[in-house]
Length: 313
Image (cartoon, rainbow, N blue to C red; front, side, top):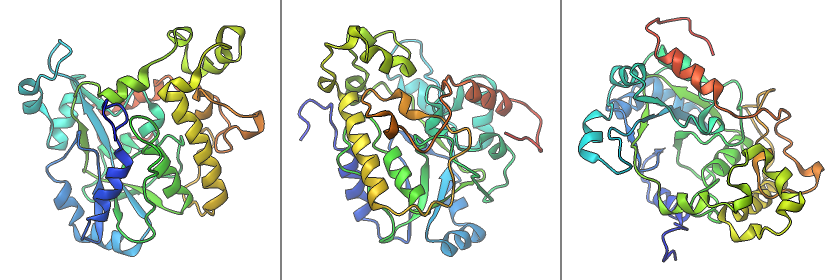
């Protein structure tokens, strides 16, 4: 299926894994995210189980963080990394204070920026905090959900790197899932090296090497970009598939959203390499904010503070 290792059938395998679930609920997380030692026990708190049982479309958000690589060299220094992977909240906050860990992923604010990290810092163990809105259609949280016929599958057309998780989250939101984050629980990304599929995604024509992602379309529509064979690049092929997916989602899944897009939601479509007519631009977001991660920096600064209680995003 993938002899070069650049087009890993990730969503096929996610669906295969889901098909083997024998419990009422599952926790979805990629293998490079390590759970806090209390995650299982928190999910088994009576009030948590009651909340999960009361709503078949509850998407319990487990906030995610990342630890910095512990060695200077670009290598997988496991002996250095593993002993420092935080298992408890106090260990995690300690690493954040030392600038050795942060929310995931500062370079992609839309990916997890809807999670209320500052509120999570003081959130009680096992308590729920409903997300008031979603800041980006790139939001791709890791979740605990009920495994039943209502749960949408992952879109198997997406393979390798790029948009394979966010499209699932988009369908969950449109299908009426309530996103609510869980207190005290967390996941931490292990600082591994870039995969072959990520490296394939990163490839760009020379004309785009130093171009800001929000200005790519301007280059592509100019004389400079007229000779670029876009579809020879993984990212452009995924973007084209994503536009088809958005059409399918709009036409086939009734909008039953319980969590709206935020009024200042990021306009993610300005980052696509492949575009259609202007009227087909993202109907979910109006702002064309430059997603430069400033909010992420502020969140991590707040998490590093010693003060407790009353923090607001």
